[in-house]
Image (spheres, rainbow over the protein chains, first blue to last red):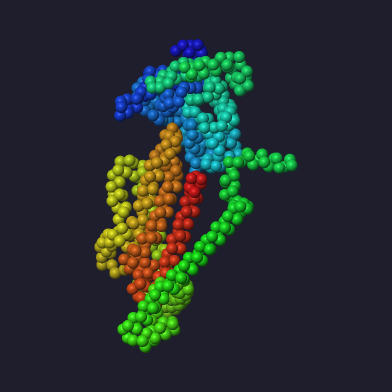
Length: 274
Length: 366
């Protein structure tokens, strides 16, 4: 793929530098929903490769199949044709190697923030000691700024706070790929900005390969290494890919002040409007 | 001035907490206190109105029956007999009182006589136990059964028997309906397998359940002379009342929020963890709604079943008083009616508070 070569990313493991390495590979991906009037093809011929430590945002019109694609990567939605593989291994079902941050925070409302994070940690690190597992959960809750709210019931937290717990829960299980399905779509713009900052701050540390769906063009540019644009459905596929060439770590101000920002923005809006 | 501004800002920051704060500290809310005072006032006024209507109604019925009696004496036995009848009724002699809806005061009197009666019987019982203590000790030493008090049960004993029966029945319903509900809630094929069963047996009347249980328990207890009325009645009550819990549990378990299930899938929780950490807690509110309905149904069918099973509870008490036809029987029936109603109300309140404790989403419960 051209973009891969253009980007020329390298991957370091045990001090040895390897050439570009693909973390997530979608090839010839297809999704069909049978209906009484015949098959409805949501996705077809969808090819996308996502590199290790890359942050990719996906934008496209509502109903084009972005969420379908993401839930297929998560393993929550069966694949009708083609392949999805993580580090060369085909995806056959859901698993904690692909952490998901859902659009709704999806916390168990009867558990505290801490218990919600611990639920995943206990599952993924069964051989760690209890203290170690508690420390992991606490660490990530601190990272999202909830040190004072460990023991609050999830139902007592505001939407934004709940989504912070969602972020902590997803990072705490140390997935290979992080899938974010419009995680900030339900928040007001102030809270959304705060959470974007928190997300990118943790991500800068952990560098977990991330795929995020968004409707917000500015969010897409601010967070991503590449913005993937999907064509409108049915038979949606990748329409265009835009590499965002800003240095990391980024600040909102440096991004907004960058001379290329408005070129990128125009590119994306042109795509969405045509 | 400055402080005011700060307070205002804080108020804005925690605006989403306001409903919770108001819930925690209702006593500090002036308008709330006033409105609850008003509600209490309305309740008291309506109770007084009810008593007044009752008094008027019973008076009218009393007069109607009294007039009829006098009229009848007049046409059948002549004027003298009619005058005697009138005098007899006015004197309050129990032999010729009209037998109709008792007035609130009569009912109050009956309640007090029932309580007095309870004291007498309790004293009797204590005396009996004391008298038989030595004999019973000997009997037990010889390996025989002790002699127990078999006299009349007091009204309080009767109420306690009813409560005991309803709790035993409720417990039975819980032990049957909740596990089965969970199992059929988890499996769609078991749900369809059980569906006809639930639909057919749910509407069956308490009387028929009683007869069914009677058929079975009678055979099981063959050759055993002990009193099985209690067993029959609590099993019938449980079987009658369990359906609401069964249906609600199955529904709660099968309709867990898809997001929670997805979280469980992504985390690859095992079946045990999935059931106990995700599915059960999330269906608890519905399970408890079911249990609340079960308890109130249990209490309602209890009366009919006790009557049939001859179990020494309120159902039998009401029926015996009706058959008895004594002067204060009607008043005693009304006392029982109020006791049944008030206990039913209290049971429902208890379940409601338990339900509120276990439900995680307080706002949805209201």
